[in-house]
Image (cartoon, rainbow, N blue to C red; front, side):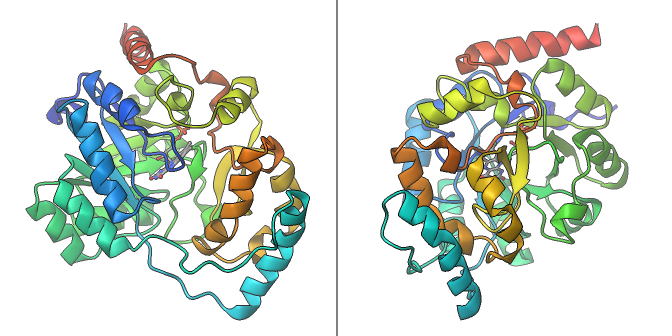
Length: 351
Ligand SMILES: Cc1cc2nc3c(=O)[nH]c(=O)nc-3n(C[C@H](O)[C@H](O)[C@H](O)COP(=O)(O)O)c2cc1C
């Protein structure tokens, strides 16, 4: 039997900490995961090229273990006037409720992807992962030449095949349970919601590259199930959100602590791309309009001030509280203890 990806990557256990944009993936979290024998991951998507360099230096200052950096494959969009106007109209009452000036169109909607990628290649993480789109051949070649392994995110078979054909080293299968944004870039997001185990099985059967399982993996038994379905490593996001080293706000952590099974749902209303989080009033009241909001990253940029003000005013009913379906099983532990528990549960599942 060939050696599994996590062993070839010299991890002590098959745990990859998911990149999580929005503050969770501090240098402390990443370094604790990598130092504990998993693979820590910096969420670089919302960072400027300079911030990517600084964060990588901060991670390295805490230790020399390998880590990954993740980006969203995106281009600066050019939304139409009418859709922008509708979005501003829909957001205005929320601004008023928070005492903010009416929403305006920002100068730019996202970080410059090409320059983010350049910064990533310069800092040479062990591995780079990508979501929301696929690289071109030139970009992949530049990563390979720098000695960086590449993971592509897939939410359906077509996306997995596209990444494998391009030459990715592994494909991360994002099941419907996953917290945060859906990575879908081929086909409809609503048609790309297979449960993690069945998506992992399908991709492992059909792709010539290793598959990493993501979505709803909260303990060692979940890891064992994913590996039995063909995964060669597991990517856990929500499981790390309540860790002491995670950088999300105390309010978000508190909401996670109180969450019950079934409390999450998918929404397009915060960012223009479907994402899973704790359901709240903003998500419910915007639901009838969400399909008409401009696509990511436009709506994400437009709701930035509203989300920041809601967090400052401690209004959880208006905040984006990304979390996966397994949220009720997330543990409040330091990373080292969480990794130790995952390891012993995983081994117990094989006994
Ligand atoms: C708060 C949060 C932020 C996320 N941000 C990113 C991101 O920046 N890039 C990315 O590829 N995936 C992101 N994800 C998705 C994860 O990569 C992964 O698919 C997911 O966490 C797995 O499901 P789980 O949360 O049930 O473990 C995020 C997930 C969460 C919960």
